[in-house]
Structures are given as C-alpha cells and as structure tokens.
Length: 227
Picture 1 (cartoon, one colour):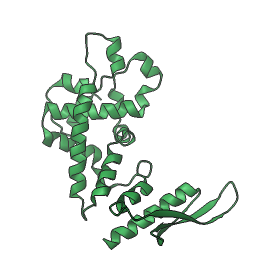
Picture 2 (cartoon, helix red, strand yellow):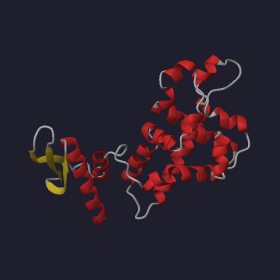
Picture 3 (cartoon, one colour):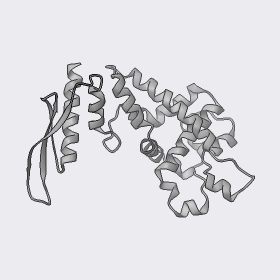
Picture 4 (cartoon, one colour):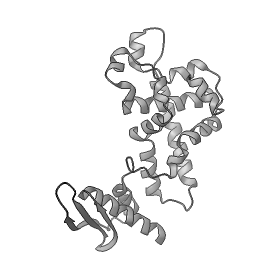
C-alpha cells in the first residue's frame, strides 16, 4: 500500500503528490540524494500548529467540560513525541518513511522522534494540500479515540492531579504509604493520596510508583464527581 492508497481508503482528499511524499522524507535520505528532494522539517512545523489547534478544539468539546489545567495537560500528552509516535504506529505510517541507509540500519524507522516528526509533517502536508476540514477528517480517524481515552503508557495521573489542584497554590498533595507486604518477588503496596491532609484516594500496586499512580487516578475520579 502507498500513502495515497491509505488516504483513498479513508476518503481523504489529496492533490499534490510531491507535497504528500515530502512529509515522509527524512533529512538522512536527502543527504544521500542531494539535489533531488527536500526533507520534511518545514512541513513538520506546519503540522505541529495544526495539531495544537485540533487537539485544543476537540478537548474543548468534551462533556462535561474539562478544566483548563486538565485540557493543557491532556493536549501536551496527546501531541508529545511518544503520543504521536504511538498513533503513527497504530496505522503503520512509519512504513512510508524514506530514510538514509545509516539511519535505517540504526533503527530510525522505529524511533519515536523520527516517527513523531513524520506524523506532524504528514498532517502539515495534508493541510497545505487541501484545507482544515479535510485534515480534521483525517485527524478524527487517526486520533479521536485518544482524545477521550486515557492511555496509562502516556498519561501521568499524578501530573494530572497536580494540574487539577494547581489553581489554588496553597493546596498540597502528599502520597502516604499505608502498607507494604508480600514476598520480594511479588510485593504489594497501598498508598493514600492526601490533598491538604484530607484523603482523596487509595491505590494498590506492585511498586510504590504504581500505587501512587492508582491513588491519583482514584482521587481524580472522585474529584470529577464532585464538580
């Protein structure tokens, strides 16, 4: 499958084939084919801007409304290097990358930074080639489930909880270990999270970090119900 077959599959308009192809050209490939191609770095700049407004708009539309701090944190996680690389891998977009031989051999096709840059460039190219409505259609196919979905490999509940209470700088968040038990090869930790000395959530995990994350998640769920 080519990138154009991919776009046709999802009924995404495209006109300028060279512009779309450029989105997948890494600088290492250009260095080996001097004078023939341009890399995707300028398109990456455009795609970053489009992704910022797209994710902001879709997060703004969520009901019940998210607080500004949560929207900022969520957008940052959606458009971070790891988040964009994950989306690109889900649709195997990295198979269309054009890399130099050295970059290919060193694993560049699976490197988050290269894949994320490619994804931004792809979005930038589709936007420049058509219009915002068309690129939103594409992004809804690629990213809409991630707008609501909480992916624990990307999303940090502790950071989100901090953002949730940051509007009042006087509030403090403390994670308190309740117990640690079990054998060394299968430990269990229980943690309570306190906001201004009041317990808002509990979490259990196989490490203190996991227990804290689950406690923050529990607190966020309770705080959302109290809004």
